[in-house]
Image 1 (cartoon, rainbow, N blue to C red):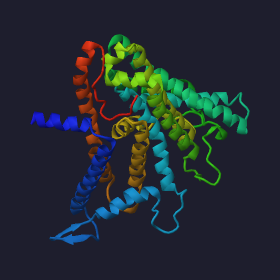
Image 2: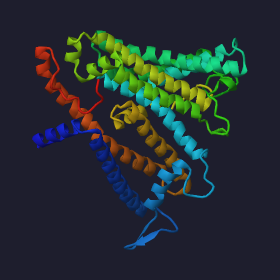
Image 3: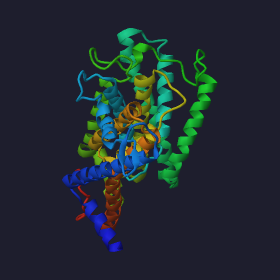
Image 4: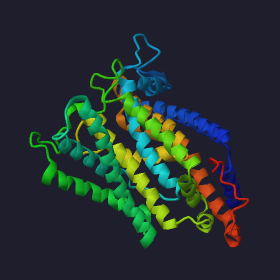
Length: 415
């Protein structure tokens, strides 16, 4: 049995992009079929006036309707009449996609460096507060209108990136210079981030005009603008924000593939011994990769403030934790993060559509979407796990003679 599992792990680790795509599609189809059965059977335990009579039992939930709302409801029902590209459901999907691209990239950067950053949530929380405070205070000395937007929006994003980067550098330094496990330190720092930001909010930055725990609102002109004629109407989504997220995604992919820093980062994650032999400063790379990872999480917090709410709220959604699943589903590929984030956006918006159009309880919707994500992500998770152990085993002879020849990197991008 162990030999079979090792053989399967090796095959997954060395699978090509096409193989991984086929496996993911097969996993998705399997999850949809099993999830449909789960929804149908669950309907037998519910009460309803109308349903499918079968074998003396009444089945209240229609799996076809559930999946219709999940996948097409998230797009605003494009097969029905009167559909427009700027509908609310699609805007909700793209809003969630935009934010998850930032957090997914944050986790992916750390993973590619051989680190597990579970602290993206804390980095997002800290970055979001830094953005809101910076923009609110800077607005007092910056001209209003278009000029103010040109200054305050980049300033707010930069503040979020700096705050998130500094907060990400802390576990990086602890890992590099104290050999502290980054999983434990980042989890602890998530909790500390909530405490610190809540204390700072109540002590100094609370909006005096609101009983809710939140900062003062940023000026309206400092929020991410929508394109005229595009998404609007209070949908809290901007195509400019999505375009920036996609550009950042492409930029990180270019950084990995075409720069010496990206090469050193990937080599440190794949083959630390060879990287050290080649002159890569392991401690510096650990701190740098965690700083970059934290900065991306902080940017996610900045856009959550400037695009969605226009202020920092104490109740921050778990976008950072969702970014872990997005990164795993994407195989830590910066380009793949976009597709994975879009799938999560569909599930978020489609889940709301199911709740509105059907009697399926929210708990069952959560189980169904989680079930699909689990099935789709697990093959990639085991590929990454198997690739990590296979690479380590194959790299041992390379460390002895100072080279890395003959080591298969599992189908990742070439240096």
